[in-house]
Image (cartoon, rainbow, N blue to C red; front, side, top):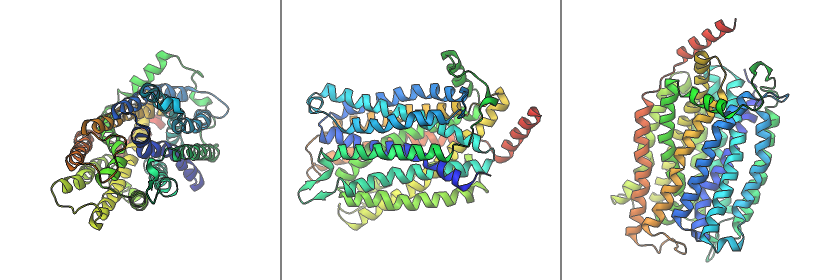
Length: 471
């Protein structure tokens, strides 16, 4: 049984992903398009290119960490190597020289370069960190608990960081709206850098005793390209993993659209103040995250993980679009009415609850499939499996900012426009495109969720066969 301190320290590593996610879900598209004046399509292309580049590097990092022999184990050297440069990336992302701002081409390249930098260095940390979970325990339920701790910190910090930033850095003072003040963003970048360094190093220290002896795994320190590709494609031979990848791809497209448009929708379509957005991000998310952490323990002993995938996906389909549908149908009052605020509050609460349960079940299934893969192919390939999973998710997520940026240009939402001054047809078109981008991929994800099946009893059979073979 893994100690509470180790689980807590491991879970904190999820905040590394959160720091990146907070920046890109809340501020990057807003900063580059509405503050610096980059076109939405150019910003979307730059962000999509960064995600694609990052996705391609994931299998390499995963296979390399599977094969590394070192006195510090297979995972921790990568986690240390990714932490420090990732922090520097946030400074570069938000501290943009005037000469760069004056050119659409240079500004697009600047956004793409630092996005590639941040995403790649995060992968150097995150993929070995995820793979470490499969080395911490082989228990079906404890894996959900360990990865649940990671998901807790992922989503807790993903919403708390923007919420705090909106109140402390980007609040409105009189006629000045801090969300559109350029000088506030370099401060946010510096704070993100410091947070990255603290979280990464604390996680490495807290889990330093896990997976230290890598001699039993063999392998060369740096496998060649052929081995990288062989490891990656070997993971696709497992039926459950192929179906889970398809599920995650579709769900990730939906999530990418959501994070690309959420802040803009909150500001322009719903006309929420910085403090209202902060409240909707923070309180429902705290309640949703906490509720999901309790629920996963109860559900884990009663419901198979693949069933959790199906239930949460179906409920997210409803929750993701109902406020937009209600507004377009005239069922919600005008902006500023308390019913609007509490409707969005409830939507965020339910979304976080369902999304976290889905994420825990999905990642825990990857850890279980690592055992299934070992039985089939005779090798431990946790890094390759998690890398392939992240590869598919990130590649799909690239469509989110690309779609969101194109929607901005398509509906005519440009720099200089302020909440309350935009014509209603423009806002309605923005809502329709946003809701469609969230809904359609989730329907595809629901279809593939019914093709995944790996119960606790089946995992115990697999592990028993592995023990028999080892003995």
